[in-house]
Amino acid sequence: MNGREVKKMDFYEIVQKRHSVRNYEAYVLSEEEKTKIDELLTQVVSINEANTMNWIREEHPQSSGRICAKNGQTSKDYLIEYGFQGEQIILSLVEMNFDTLWRAVGTPSDIPAYLIFGKGKEKKSVSEKVMGFFVKSGNRKPVNEFLENNSETLNDSQMRIIQSCVKAPSAINRQPWKFNFSGEKELKIKVIGNSKLNRLDMGIVLFHAYKAFSVEFENVEIIKKGDFYWKIKA
Image 1 (tube, rainbow, N blue to C red):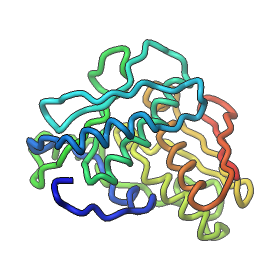
Image 2: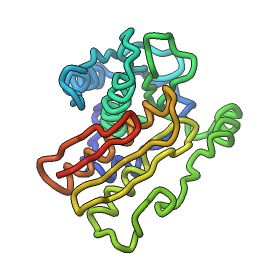
Image 3: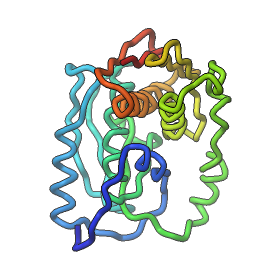
């Protein structure tokens, strides 16, 4: 892109690099970048094939662009699916060296959230500093606070999976998750709360768990146990 060589990152590097950015430079996408982004939007994996979404890229005056899927569905699983698919797109954009942001506030009724992307400004604006204070940006809880297991009993693969899940973005950085390994290759995930944002958060963390399992193991399954209770197994 633009004559620059982009280093290929693995999943864990991408997760580590991702952080929410609210203030962007006036960066215009090249035709190559537009094509690559539009192609990745057609390759998104869904939890359920019946829930494939029509993701589109739009112009956005405050960044390089925004991405969304417009749909009037109000089903609970639709919002979880939106988070699962949207986080795939977010991490693909991070791999392309873009900064990103989930924005679920102030969207039309048929759009659960926008995925904002572009080149973040090095110097934060006053509004971004204030928002960072309220959402405790970058202030993440220790892994043990999310685990129902003793962390000392987990092997290296399990710890990598949990660490990737804890790095998932969540509304106002609430991190409303609980994790429990019920077997070496079986992880139970629960989200605390019952709202649109909790369902998006459920889908987002599900993708982190699913992708990490895919890196560590083979033949990964996603199993719904309840609206806010899912299981990943291999």
